[in-house]
Every structure is written in C-alpha cells, then in structure tokens.
Amino acid sequence: MEATSGAEVALVLDHAQDVAAAMRLAAVAGVTGRAASVLDAPRWWRGVSAVVVDDICAGMLAAARLPRRDRVLVVTTGAEVGAATWRDALALGADQVVGLADAAKVADWLARLGEPAAAGRLVCCLSARGGAGSSTLAAALALAGAADRDVLLLDGDMHGGGIDYLLGIESASGARWPELFDASGVIAADALAQALPSVGRVRVLAGRAARPGGLAEPPPAGLAAVVDAAQRGHELVVADGGRGGGIARDLTSYADATVIVLPCEVRATVAAAALAREVESRCSDVRLVVRQGAGGLRPHDVATAVGAPLAAVWPWQRRFDSMVEGGTFHRSWRRTAVAIVATSLLRGLFG
Image (cartoon, rainbow, N blue to C red; front, top):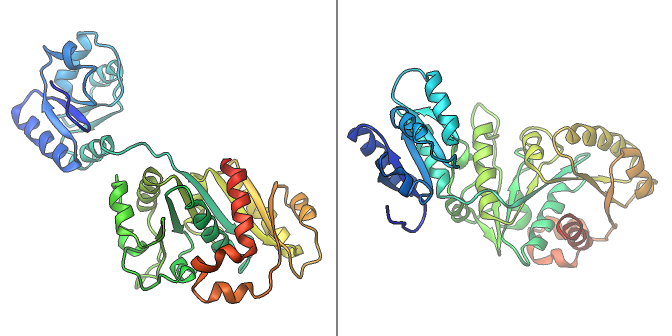
C-alpha cells in the first residue's frame, strides 16, 4: 500500500460488502481507506496510519504474531463479542472492539484519525459571587492571549446574558451554544472555528436564552465534543463558568487551571472557600484573583482564608463599569487594570 497524504486506514475485512461499508464511512470521516490483505500484513502493518479489522481477520493477524501497534479498531459481525476476539484485540493493541453494524461508533473512531490530538490549554474563570467579574477576566485573558496564539472564548454561564454582549459582537453572524446542543462524537476543529464569530484572533462561543421548556445548557456529550474540538483547534481556550453551577462543573474537570474571582469581602471569601474545595476535586490547579474595593480585607488574608494561592490582585479602577457596559471592551481593555491582571495570569499559568 502506497502512503498518501493524511490518515490512511488499512481495511482488513473478510467480506467485500463489509469493505465497501467501511470505505464509505472512511470517506465521510475524511480519511483514506484501502482494502488490505492478511497475507501481505507484514509489508503494510507499520506503514499505515490505522487499521480496521474484523474478528475473523483479527484472529489471523494475531496468529501471525505481528507486533502490537496503536490505532487498531476491531469490528465484529456477530451479536456478541467472544473471548477469542477480545484476546486477539489485546494481542494487536486495539483501541476498541465495536459492532460493524454500529456505524456511528465506527465513524466516530475514523473521524478522530483525521484530527490532531487535543493540545490547547483550558483556563476556567469562576466568580465567588454574582458580579465578581469572571466574565470580564475571561474576556481579558482571551484578548491578552490572542497576542501570540489562537484563542477561543467559551461562555459557560448559560444564564449570564451572553459574553458576546460584553465584546460588542452580539449582532455578528455565527453559531451560539443552541446551535451546538446536539453535537456529539468528533467535531472538526476547523469547522468549529469557522462557525463562530470572532474578535481579532479570538473565536467566541456565546450562550443564549433558554429553549422553550428547558434550560439553555448543552448535554454532557455536546459539551465534551465542543471542548475537545476547541482544544484541538486553539492553543488557549478560556471559559467563563460564572458562579460555578451548571456546565461549569464539567468545564472545571477539563480545565488545566481554574481561577476564582472574588472581592475583599467576608461573605465572598466564605463562598470562595467552599467553591475552591468543590473545584479542587476535579481540577488540581485552583488560583485566586482578588479584587480590591470597598471590602476591608487584605488580598493575602483572603487567600489564606480561602486556602488557595493568590495569582493576582485586581486593583480598583474608576469608571471601569462604564468601560465594560458600553460593549466596547475589546477596544478599551488595554486601558483597564484587568489587562495587567490577565497578562500576569497568562505568564504565571503558561510562562
């Protein structure tokens, strides 16, 4: 088998109609499928990107004592998977054993071959109380990060009104969360990026009002598919999780770091301590950004009480709210105190 550009999959199936079916699934997934022979396996076994083999041929390949390799899918034509098939799959190094009739699972596995592994970092911003500023910090982090990398800003606060309003792009064309609620499996990273509105190099996935009769929150499968595609297509993904409810719980489980924003207030400190303990069960890196203002506490005392490291102090700034509310934050953010906070955070998080 001659190598071609992109992922090339050897299809080792005993029946011609099964080869044709697998070929169609490969074409839909955007990878190259080629029929391969068990007899010639020593010649092509290491030269292809991946292998799809049925249970009959898997037994032959295992008997030939070929070395284990990655990216092998064993498909079965029977109703049940026998012990011999599991043993052969283990010997070949198979990722999965699925029924050939389950076209969705086979297509999903093939689609992953054409996509890079998720590599982008994900930072989730949370507020210890309403109005603490997680949305503003998330937007500033995304805008600061876009100076030298591709960034996706993900709105994880479904009841926050939409982070696109903060950036002044609420009328821009492009997909919002409701259009992606039914997503699952593998989403092409390029397709997601092209579907979203943007501010410079920042792609924005914003929330919207609830669907009739239900909450405006994506199901877990849809969220997982979107986060996976976002990380594959962007070096940095910044998520605004609001006060930590709803999908923010899942977002923090995907996050490389979680930043909790809180003012220097007693009640906010108590709330942040409980939130930090809860998030630490899913994300090992939890940091604080403490806002100075009317509260009488000192930032370092707040961090000690919460029990999480102080990543940055957000100084009080006159007329800050008017700069945020005008929908021009993407143009004025460099003149705000949060710009310094965001730059410092990125340096501390990623060097």
